[in-house]
Length: 471
Image (cartoon, rainbow, N blue to C red; front, side):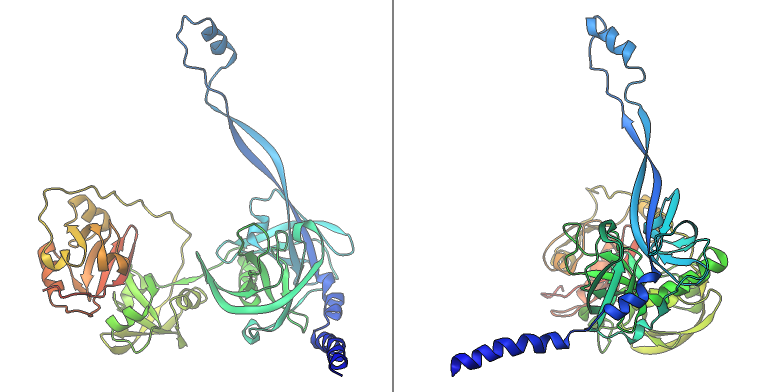
């Protein structure tokens, strides 16, 4: 009897499980024709370094040979060759507009688009936006089948999604999975709240659509996390509402305008929340306000914690850049901040985000032997510090502060580094080494003062938990 029960279970459970799985065939049949294969050709210039003449004396018999037959030694000899790559895209209008990733068409000499019916077109790049990795193409065609847009805001974690693209050049390949997370921030990608899924995405899938089960596009497959170069279960898609906003601007003007307010921010950790008297770790902590910026004109200060922007809650520091950049330059909005445990509502006129600029290199921090020694209240924290030189103060445009020469113990555990310049303690300006020591003497064990630190070209707050009395 037991054997029969086990046998029945083994037969029934697989069929029951199969019945729960979704059927993607109808979606693929109806939407597959909207997905295109993109082939990119570009000219790559590669400098080849000519061999050097051996270090031979002039009376060596081979010296004259190398001198005559190896002219201009060591100079680069440019070489050009054609590079080909593939990606994916999808039709968004019947008259031939196509969305893909900016990195798919970057540096392209020619972009070839192939439809599922085998027709091929040379595409024009209307515009591209590196910050969101979106590009808009146009082909000379009509009567195409555009996709339908869905609402990424209604996506639920655990929901089934489907990708169609050309991984490794295998056109119109279909893969499926579930939404793993929403609103993901990736390094140096703070303007896009990525959709994370476990849909198999590989090189060549870039720019292809991510569908929900209704057959609506909810995202554009853009990146994967991988240690091997291939799929490892983590893929990221740009929400279609973000992409559509960019595409609309590219179609109208060929470029994208974004808002900015001119602040440097950081995450509010548990220790920083305690330092600033917040009930929980949320919001975006302002560590620097740019001179002459919209934020300065609005009255925003270092140490303010931004809680809301234009009525929308800022749960984490990742939220603020997205909210600000999506705001039209010139718009007047309200920004809510927490300052000294008091909530303030400040009106601000949003500026326009400039093009990326390369940060100026900071001067090195040579050892400054012979300077006054740090007070005991600083040494007990594990900090060896000196006052910045006139050159360093001029470069960073500061009038005071103390420069960390070495750090260990509780200060190192807090995240302070050699070369950091401490500008303030709990928003009290640090003017000299001696004054910094007096500021630190007021704290007792388990207090968490917030140190405002200049690190290269950025400023940030570092919460320093006092592990033993400093007085």
